Image 1: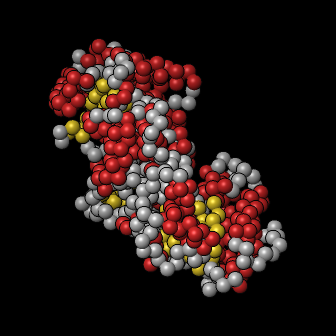
Image 2 (image 1 turned 45 degrees about the vertical axis):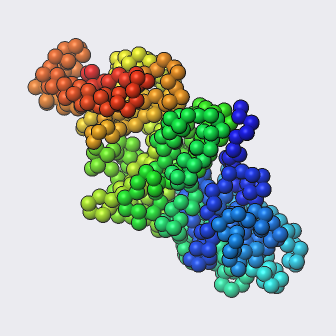
Image 3 (image 1 turned 135 degrees about the vertical axis):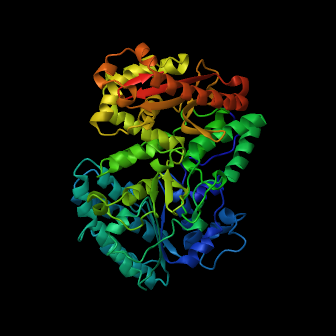
Length: 601
């Protein structure tokens, strides 16, 4: 372990602790002035684990009048420090964190859990500001909140309310298997507790002592469903000024990585390799539609994933064993939820199959919907806008430029997120233990010995039949590509991508060993897929099914497709060997899929 490494605040969302204990902090405090100017009630949306809580903690420390003596110590040296706004350290602040509300019960239990959380926060606020007149708390947290705001006003102060993960427990209810949709409707509809709470917030914000509200969340769905109770909020999530409010830019991450490389004694080439690995796995987010053509350098890195990688690299001077941080693995459940909505399975599978070489397969929308509720998603929407927007807010799709008609293109942002899609599809299509063991053995043999036969046997006998039964098939090479991608995905050993760009061409699937895994006896792989319908062979399907692979290889249409794929692979090999040099252990595989039943290589 490296005893002198940089301190990375992985999993730490306490701004004061980060500043006072010498952790790395990426300064965004210059945005505070912009936030004050833009409005008094603000909603900021970002995917899970994207640094929202730390930004909220930054604001809490900045505005808290009880922490005025600490201002110079924690904000000195930051962008806002020399010239703070007049409102700094001028508010009673209170933070509600809805991610802590227990959802494992019926609607009355959830109401009680929410009220208990708010009451604890109110009691803490009264204790931290001794000038406030204390009053006995009752079970009704909404009434207690209204009484607190009046007590603050009587003390000649104003309240700044922060709500972290405003939609967290509602979303947990929504995606749960215990009557999720029904409980969610009870929570947000009619006079549901969540709607009643936000009506109270709106009421006391009308000159009664609540001056400002800042909320974070993942999507606008909950806010849309309670909009009649709280329609004064302003969403700033897609403003270009806040595109990088949470997350790291390429330049910032490169500077940090260079520091770690120096501490570990890594060579410039090793630092470049580490940066490319992080770009491949973690980069790719854009949150502002005004950036019509985002480039890699302008895209945003997920901060939790980046800190996870950097902390491991700094401590041990090695990459983490698993590139996917387990804290984000649960996002696969969100993809599963969307897949279960009307038309969701098709959209999720289309997202996995979409690629640069086949732009028509991509997902296009006019703009992300910012006002849509659960009913919009449940009632068979007329187009993909609502479901695609939800995947975008969840962070499993991102903005990737526009087409010739000006429509926004949505794609999977990076390899870590692609793994969530692949794992979800794998779970759905290969649920049985015996089949999983067969798949694992076949994949291991392919990785180490470039032998595709066991894998192709498994795809023919198990995978294609399930594809057909679940109506998840396309009549072209995307079918077989998706099968191989799902069954071979392994981010422990490989940088794995579909439609890898190689000298203005696109290989269908590549498995390039991670730099830190070249010490093992594994191979690099490049695959090219072709598809032939039954009628292209001049024989009926029964006759073709009865043929051996050797006999199929002799058929002239198969020979022709294998030849075309082989020529493409030869060109790609030249490029990859030029890039990677002698360390590349590349095996190429031309695969022809016949009628969604047979595979020939």
